[in-house]
Length: 85
Image (cartoon, rainbow, N blue to C red):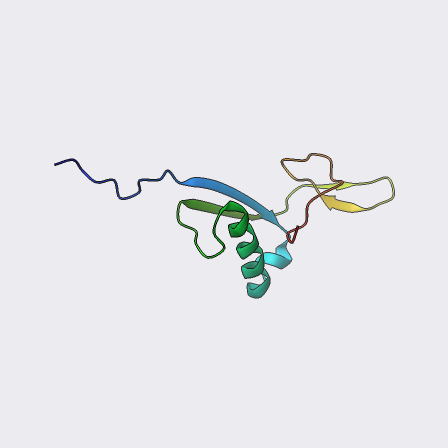
């Protein structure tokens, strides 16, 4: 008999970079997590996904002194997508 694969769907890695205020606030973290889960397919289930959370680590400063995080998919800090977008 053929062996059954316990994880038939390959796991997808999802990298999430947020401000520290999200990771340090359970309600805010859960709100952001539900929003991201909705983007990947199901607001209540993480099956098939490996979420890797990290705090912003790179910032850019405009000539006017405005500080914004640099996001991996958009090296220019403006415009940038917020967690509730």
